[in-house]
Length: 153
Ligand SMILES: Cc1ncc(COP(=O)(O)O)c(C=O)c1O
Image 1 (cartoon, rainbow, N blue to C red):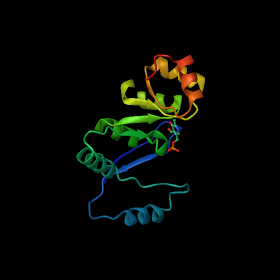
Image 2: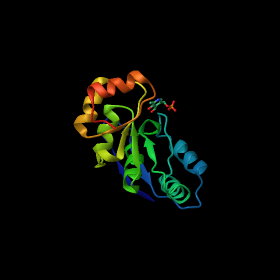
Image 3: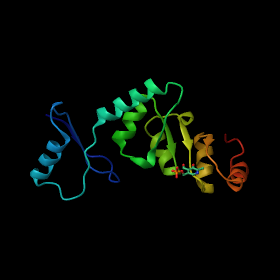
């Protein structure tokens, strides 16, 4: 049954949400998409309930570890919205990624700015957005953060 079929902003792929019977396999879904003859570009099939199950599993086995999902892995809005709704935190590697996560209504304290060599203007944006947590693994990066965003953690 087709549940929803909406177009996202022009920077994102078309999103087709389909609720399928649990006995339908991923291979069958892929075959059906290919057989439809309407797909010209690359596509992927994402099982949203698998994201939810993995999140629940993480909470069960690592209850004291707060996961920070690396947005670069898959920044599709559906994936990010699902994780945001589950209460996950986010690892953002750039201003764009921070903006994207904040646009979902995620608070700045659920975001870590993680990049080995952060751009100064992105550091300034992190400060503006109130994202205080960040990573470093070199002395010069630490001095740079101190210079441009001394309140960072
Ligand atoms: C400080 C720092 N070093 C290195 C990396 C790269 O890590 P990896 O190669 O494990 O993705 C990151 C990624 O966020 C980082 O924040």
